[in-house]
Length: 178
Image (cartoon, rainbow, N blue to C red):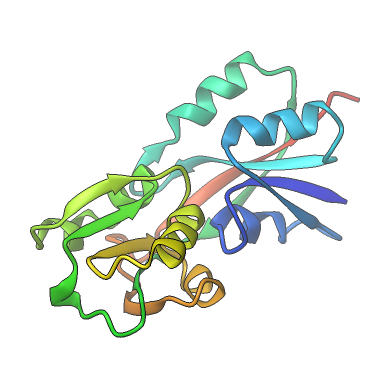
């Protein structure tokens, strides 16, 4: 069963999709694209983050749900462990900017506020990791999963950087109405 998620391989959405039996995760460029993939029948299900225990509601998804004809068929809870990733050889003191999805940045505010880093919003955590790997910027780090770091050849500068040791995101499982 194809399950659409926002982001690229290594995204927390992909991890949530894999919680469904016999799931074949299908990456989509945005939350809106997940809704579209399910509406058009390109995916039987979609997973989108609704709420994080630290950062609150994912407003973009809430707005998309309000306009959608899709049904929330289930909810999944995923323990989210964030990592600070950079190119191999980059040290913490080399970092000037940190990029990620705004929700991920909010989940790690304690660490981020202790440094004089410029925060840069990206569409997804895994997309931020891929972009850093492509751009090769030695002054930038990203907040994403350690798995995303491994997939894109990034080094873990710090793991478990989320403020809440029980950091959990609830995902909605979307499907077309029967």
